[in-house]
Image 1: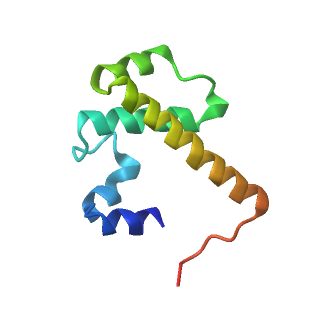
Image 2: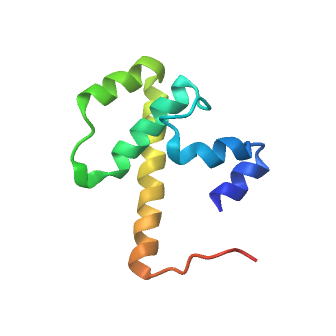
Image 3: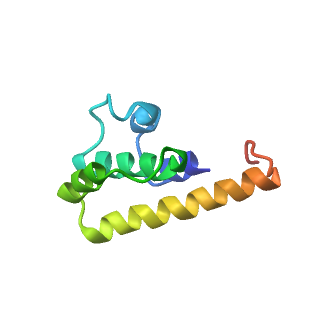
Length: 95
């Protein structure tokens, strides 16, 4: 769903293909890299709190509104994913 939406909004297939390796690629801007790093940390709740160093790095390239937007978007998407997992929502190709 998200890949299809991204492609429909002119995201490149190259960037989508390297997204799992965003740290090693040169495809993402400083702001995008900060958002991706924050997203990973917020998603991995079992690792504990987001480290202060990560907040500091994020706030060097993202403003307070952007940090807040990333936090809220990650929270909402993760909540949807957890409900889908709990309810055993079938995930498959759309028609």
